[in-house]
Image 1 (cartoon, rainbow, N blue to C red):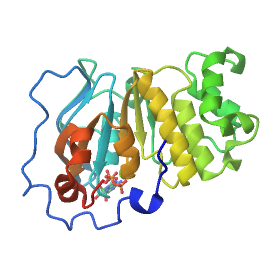
Image 2 (cartoon, rainbow, N blue to C red):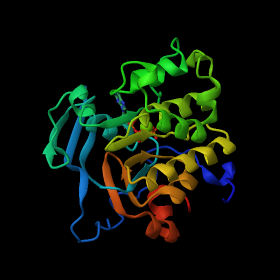
Image 3 (tube, protein in one colour):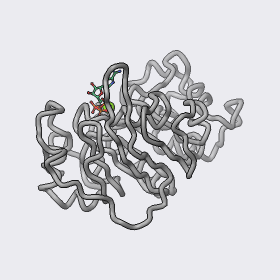
Image 4 (cartoon, helix red, strand yellow):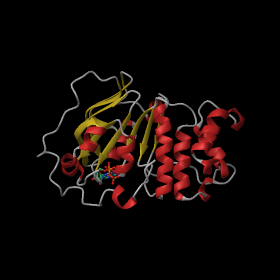
Length: 274
Ligand SMILES: Nc1ncnc2c1ncn2[C@@H]1O[C@H](COP(=O)(O)OP(=O)(O)OP(=O)(O)O)[C@@H](O)[C@H]1O
Ligand SMILES: [Mg+2]
C-alpha cells in the first residue's frame, strides 16, 4: 500500500468562487451508455431560506460502484447529500432511488430504504457507549447480543478502536476514533447505499490509510457508495466514478481513472493536480 502524504494529498484551501472553471470549461458528459443507476438526481435545485444553493444538480450513482463527489469548499456537496436525504427539500427537479421518486419523502422514510448517511459532524451520541451507539444504528437488532457477530468481528478488524472502547462513552474517543465509529455505525448492517460526507477530514495519515482499507473492503463487498471528499489521494485510490461540483452544479462527470490521468482537467476543475 502506498503511503499517504498529507502535504500533497489535500486540496489547497482557496476561496470557493475565485477560479473560473465551471462554466468556461466544456463539460464532458458521462459516457453515453446506459448506466444502472441506484441513485439519480435530475435537475435538482435547493434553496436554503432565501439562498439559492443548488442550481440544477444532475448526478448518477451507478449500482455497485463507489462514486466520488468532489469540489471546492462551498461548491454544494453537503447540500446535495442533505437534499438526497430529505434534510433539505428540493425546490425543483427529482431524486430517484432504485427507480422510485423520493424527492418529497421524509428523511426517516428515505433512510428506511436501507440508506445510511454519515454527515460531516458524524452524528454519534457522546453520552452513550460505543456499543450503545452501534446498537442504535442496527435497525434489525433490539439488543446488543442480537447484532450480527460475524459482522461486528469484521468491523473490529477494520477499526480496532471500536472494539477497544466498546464499553466507553463515545464522547471520550479522539476525533479520528469518532469518525471510525461513525463509519462503523453505517455498516453495522448491510445497506443498499452508503453516503459519507468527508470521512477522512482531520484524520492523521495512518488513520486515513486505515479508512481507505475499510472503504476498499466495502467496495469489494459490492456496496454502492457515494463519498464526498476533499482528500484527493483518498479519491484517487477509491473512486470508480467521479462527479465534480462547482457553484451548485455538477460540472464534470466520468470515470475517476480518466480524471486522475488528466492533470489539466484536474487543475481546471479543482485547482490542483491529483
Ligand atoms: N444553512 C445554510 N444557510 C445558508 N447558506 C448555507 C447553509 N448551508 C450551506 N450554505 C451555503 O451553501 C453553499 C454550499 O455549501 P455546502 O456546505 O453544500 O458546500 P460544500 O461543497 O459541502 O463545502 P465544504 O467543502 O466546505 O464542506 C455555500 O455557499 C454555503 O455557504
Ligand atoms: Mg461540505
